Amino acid sequence: MRNSNSSIGGIPTEGKIVNKASNPSSGEFGGQWTIDKLDILEKYLDAYTTALKNQPFKLMYIDAFAGTGEINLLHEDEDAQAFIEGSARRALRIADKPFDRLIFVEKDPQRYERLDSLRNENRGRDIRTENADANSYLRNLQENWRSWRGVLFLDPFATEVEWATIEKIAGFNALDTWILFPVSAISRMLPTSRVPDVISDKWANRLTRIYGDESWRGLYSPNPQQSLFGDELIERDPGVDGITKIYKGKLKSLFRQRYLETSKIFMNSRNRPLFEFMFCVGNPRGARIAKDIADYILKSSA
Image (cartoon, rainbow, N blue to C red; front, side):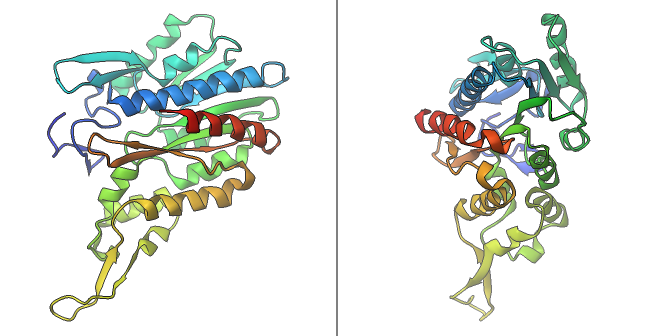
């Protein structure tokens, strides 16, 4: 994975460590940030189930991009690899109050085949594996949410999570949602020195699906300095603050008091932002305690 010209979902990757593997048979790839991300998630799952263990609700965990269930870590020496438990397996090992139902969604057939083995390894558990597109599955999810509460983990392979899906989830009022926002991938789709109108239709359409509208075009504005030929320069501010600010603003407008201001930025080995870990609460009645738990975990993480 050292080739900087590799890509995921048509978006060029940066360096040898990426969010998920493009080769389904090899599992997922990651670095220290992957471990940190999974640690944050597991700590929240443990605290969440403990907090609700005496409540009448049944508890559900949904992993919308579950992969194979394990992570293949890459080290500086590419021949030195280590496999660790992924998010699906970590959710399964929550013991104080185990989840009543676990749903693992994976679109890729080869990854799904390996993921599906978790059902045989954990007989007696209500585990449901779905070979499906995450957006379609979540938007068509039918459940009696009066009886259920749960946690949803959105850890896409690239930029698959659509805003229409986030809107649907918010309407359930039942799923605490962790979103791994692909800052680096989106940044590469938004060149700093290109007029937004000349961005390819493919990328423009994808950006609009991510944000739910064309608000991303507002990242571009005229540069006070004209080009050598006197033409007006339309540019985007370098960096990723604007990219995440728009998305977080939309989350806050949608979830209102259920949105947590605190987030966690994961950096690559060159100290550039890869992802931002964001959190929103499902049910308004549990917003305060859920936000307090997530806030503490995020602020105390390495």
